[in-house]
Image (cartoon, rainbow, N blue to C red; front, side, top):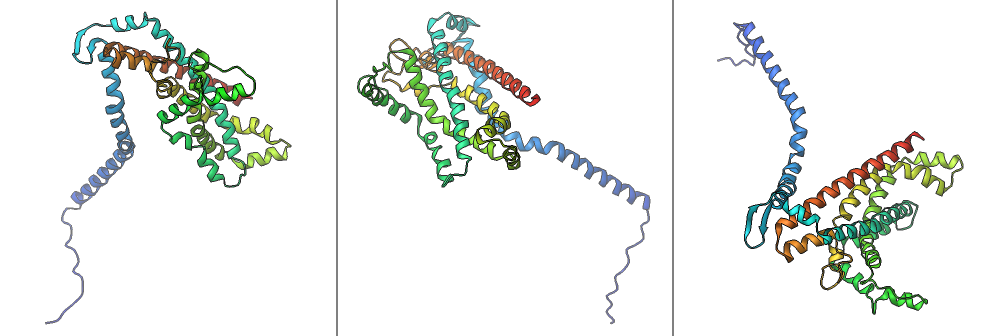
Length: 329
């Protein structure tokens, strides 16, 4: 029997019109799948974040709004529907407005110097330093220290009787400061803790933005005769405007929710004998866990949320307007 390797030709297509129609349908289906892939894939990639945010962020926010409209006790749970009664009660309390003033005072004393110092430190770290990695990692060390530990350490440093800061002041001939009695002094001490923790973190953000600035811009400025200081204000700072907007907004959100540092600044944790440094978050804690009235605590939480939204939007509009005016120049 003879063996042959000749390939048998395929049988002739009895219906060429039908095969052409199948290939056209396959091509159309593959094109549709490709379009769906281009349109839907980005949403699928980012959907885990929004699902997680909906569970851990949006649901507690909406549930807090529901609780604020009811008489809600820690032990008894949900009570009668009260509408806006909790909001009216809280807004009529002098303690609420005292907490609002303390929060804004500490926020301004911490956020403004923090952003300025962070830009200055980032400019130094961006220079040609020896062991630059060590210095860049070193500024992040305060951020990894627990806020409670920072509060306890600074509470001893700013002690009225035997604190290190008052010892230094009296040593150079100045009067000691009543850090736990005077309102402005207590705000400055708490703002010092906040700046200690967050300045290095923000400095690394600014440093990353500075390193993205093209080096030929600095070379051109050097050829034009601009010194380091002139380059910093005329080149570096204008190129950092988007990063400055981001840091200002995040500092606003964090500064208006300050709790840990103020909570551990004394042993009682109520913001001083006269509530001279009680913040809004501490007031929420007092209403919720001290007075066990979750309805009023939730009302303060929602008022704080609205304040943060308004201040963040105002900061965004102001900084964007400054950036636009700077670009026109």
